[in-house]
Amino acid sequence: MRIQLGKILFMMINGLLVASLGWSQTLEGRFEFTSRVPREALVYFADDHSVSPQERVEVDQVNKHFTEKVIVGAKGSKILFKNSDEVQHNIFALNDKHNVNINLGLADPGQEKQEILSWPNESFVKISCIIHPRMRTWVASLESRYYKVLSFHKKQKEVNFQIANVPPEVIRLKVWMYNFLPIDLEIRPGESKEANVATSKKVYGKLFLKRN
Ligand SMILES: [Cu+2]
Image (cartoon, rainbow, N blue to C red; front, side, top):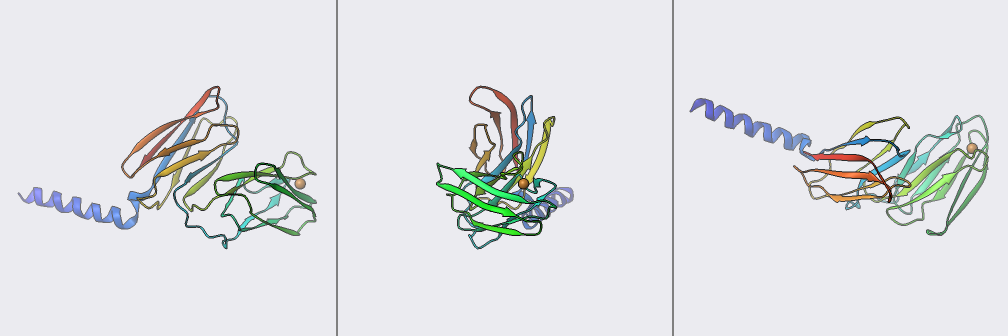
């Protein structure tokens, strides 16, 4: 009897701890790739809309690279493009679908440029530099604060990630990867799910998800 009571008490305290520390709200994910690996991914809960456009979005340019593979901000945000490099850079984007035509000219070392994120929620615009054709980053228009930007190496076979403190009612999980099919599923607390990482022609890996 005493053992039973102890057990029950332990379980109750454990339950309270889990609830108060937010452990019950973490999404854990693992990508496993078999051959072709995407360069980057944005994993996000699409049914959250709590980010306001006032929050600042910025990216820097260092060693002829953008410091982020995907920059995330709500529509209407000001994007700040810094240049901490020792050479000039340019900011350029052309996207007919979202009516985007940006060319911010040349930025000297230390100079900053600004642009308004004008494209609709859950759309992606590629930003490049006319001077350095290999430079690129993506700006994702996103109102959700529950997301993870991932960048992959070519030979990477496995990548783990977490999204913490997701409210239990936020359940619609999507994954964007350039040139791959989008992943779109629902995952509730306590559930596990899997999805293919694929193009329209072939499966290149799997995504395993577990929500505590
Ligand atoms: Cu450049």
